[in-house]
Length: 252
Image (cartoon, rainbow, N blue to C red; front, side, top):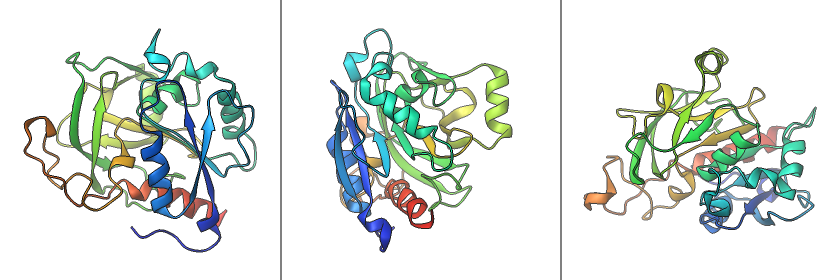
């Protein structure tokens, strides 16, 4: 997916850093490769600096004390993110990746919760996903039913919710990504990513920012990297999340 041109090429995408965030620089690079300008946002900031969208990247914010994302939800900047994401008329697009997804559930911008992987182990692998919803602010450059490969690395990656919430997510088309071929962490209904009702807030456990540049992403096999059988390859499926939000801003 080539970077978008036009008005959206000047878009400013904020990337939030909490104490313990690991993938903020990777997310900023993904934003840059997509054709936008990354803006560094600190968790203690009182302003979103007029950004056009926000990415909450992966890591272990506040050391995952209490539970993953539980403390970050109270960071001063998260109050601004929540208000902007729920603003009537033109809500701010927000993407939560891995720990960022956990923060979004803790902030109640997304339903459900994230708990320890079913096998109780940290995992790192290239994971096949099915794109279930290609109409959100972050997925409109995909096709519904498309299969992609995105790196997955987490230990609190099991998505859980009560049956009513799961039925509602399914019925409203708010399941955005689903694990394909295998369910790596025991997530209910193999859910890998969801959105809010408006589609401007999306959270997913896999890391699209690690699949944006030829030669440094996954290959198409989705094989487990732990055994050294997956060479550095040309997978760039993750870039489409970042070009999708630029397309959203371009047509807004």
